[in-house]
Image 1 (cartoon, rainbow, N blue to C red):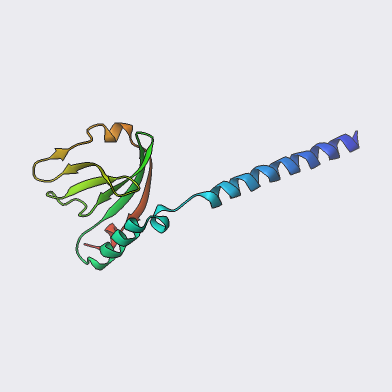
Image 2 (cartoon, rainbow, N blue to C red):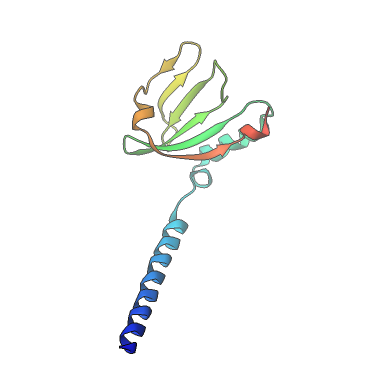
Length: 124
């Protein structure tokens, strides 16, 4: 009976260790678009030089594609927000004086939001 209990404990420990390793492996396999996509990296370098405007870059999944929403002037009433794909093709845009909105379904269909860059606290 004691041998059975020891065997159960050993198997439980081994299985829990396998799950931990898989979780650590999947975390290490996650990519950082800011490090891998040159135009995103260049855009952030430009944002860092801008001492006035607030900017945000967000990543989403939209229509089964990874996309990037770029706010070049966050909360500016006349600014246009662009959504790009990985190759920097404009998928859609919104905002500006005319209230442009070429992706009216973006808010309801975009998922997996991740903030990749944010300098709001750094600027007033």
